[in-house]
Length: 179
Image (cartoon, rainbow, N blue to C red; front, side, top):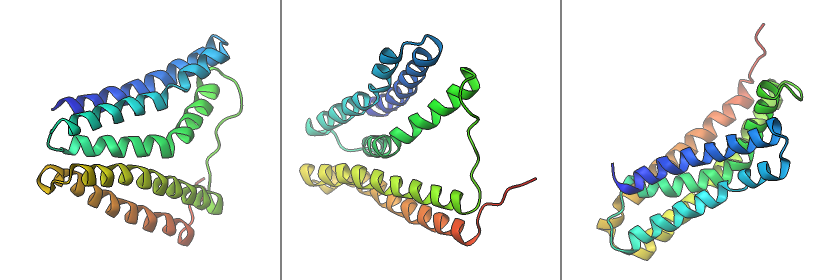
């Protein structure tokens, strides 16, 4: 596994560490401002990944799937980051800090709309990540060195289409409450 692949793993671990640390500080130690500081570090992690990946490619590295996944990771982190933090916050508050109300499960039209909003976040993530990938392909301007970026972009485009079909299916076959 190359350096960029390890960096992505490290950034994903750092992402969850700062979220858990931020939530612990916020709810267990009642340090709201310090907890918010750690939660706000998540975009800094993404920026660091973007800078290092860009520098690696700029210095002449041939793009790998890891470079492409870095762009996907950044897009997903920006598109879904706030909702992932909210999701973790709600569950941490209820299950660990024993505060607040139990997170609710959605059914029927509410669930369908929730998934449509999730698909909208996927589109936002795609636009950001695909923008980075297209920008790198354009800047490097060498098809042999950017083939992996294009392949990941093609697979992600297909995944976005499949996600749309699944999202539409929730409106046709709404999720039912089980007894």
